Amino acid sequence: MAKFLTVKEAMDKGRGKVALRGWVWRERKSNAYAFIVLRDHTGVIQCVIEKDKVGKKVWEDTEKLSIESSIELEGTIKEDKRAPAGYEVHVDKLNVIQFAERFPIVKDKSPEFLLDNRHLWIRSRKIVAVMKIRSTILGAIHKFFRDKGYIEFTPPIFQPTQSEGGSTLFEVKYFKEKTYLSQTWQFYAEAAVYALGKVYDVSPTFRAEKSKTSRHLTEFWMAEMEAVWLKLEDITEIAKEEIKFIIKEVLKNNKEELKILERDVKLLEHYAKAKYPTVAYDDALQLLKDKYKTKIPWGKDLRTIEEDKITKHFGVPVVVTHYPTEAMAFYKPPEPDNPRVARCFDMLAPEGYVEIMGGSERSNDVKYMKKRLKDMGEDPKKYEWYFDLRRFGSVPHSGYGVGVERVVAWICGLDNIKDAIPFPRTMLRKSP
Image 1: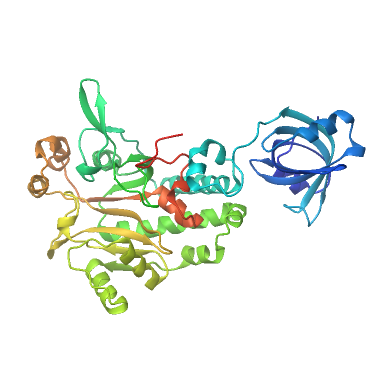
Image 2: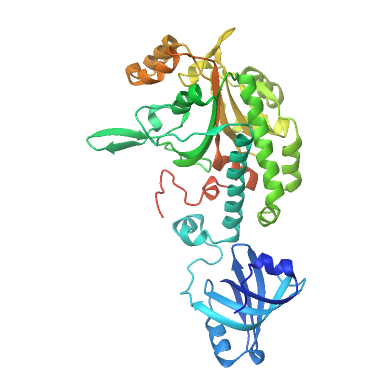
């Protein structure tokens, strides 16, 4: 065999002799011809095998080929507009690496069946396209923060306390004691910024939310940042800049994948360039009342249906700030001039994807935080190490976290967040 090319390299070459290897994605046979669509990690290409032009052994092997059989082949590539990818290879030689058993995934299988067989369904063109875009998004996050001088800082996954609500903690047996899986890196990032100034991380996160919606996972990835001296107004602008940078990187690097997913590229280009508005919670309630005749009692959290109306109004991602203090985590400080609201924000994505990130300034008032913890039924003594950060050289600092899968789902236009991660974990699914 000659030097093997990927499918993409072969199509870039466009003509002449090529050697390829991969898997049978589609196959159609007659008495004289076999049409094999070969798949590898870069794409698919149609390969034609003529019975009269190959030896008896090659034709016998060709007749036994089934979906996902692994093969090597040599032939001549030429452009053909009728072929699935616009090119066709006329095969001279064929070597079968493995004859696959009958592939269990055929058309019209249920979503649950595909999740049960995720280890095989991950080979589908849709999931491959999503995973490539996901890789671009993760790379863009690292590039965005590293180019701004942020230090990557990794937190522990085992953590002794809750940070986002005790009801969503995953309890873990830790030798003779118990601990919890990380809900966020935030507390450890707050320790790090006093040494490193500004830090970021992309790491797994766990929430024991008893939710069966298309927007929730029990294990997901968060991209978080934390920095000293930043205020709410600073981090909301950084957040907007980050999301635009991510979209631009996907547009630059994943044209083919967006095409496979039938994503509206013009719309993504608009998101990459448009100005994202910042709206206070109070103003959001007024907008819902005036524009959509939807009256939300003050203090109530916005539901997905209301968040969707807000993004439909603006047609781009929207930052909503100053949510009611009582509904927020204990470390989010109240607005000095209006303590009923906290110095915090969420970013809502359009097209029904809504909340994709959240963040806040961090309180430096130990007395206030202890009271909030007591009101929540928590023991402030468990947080003494966290309060030490305020006792020794405390300075203003802020941060936010981006739900990676929610961003992937939005940019890819997915119906369900389960397809935004290789192997989803939910309330009802812990395998494969």
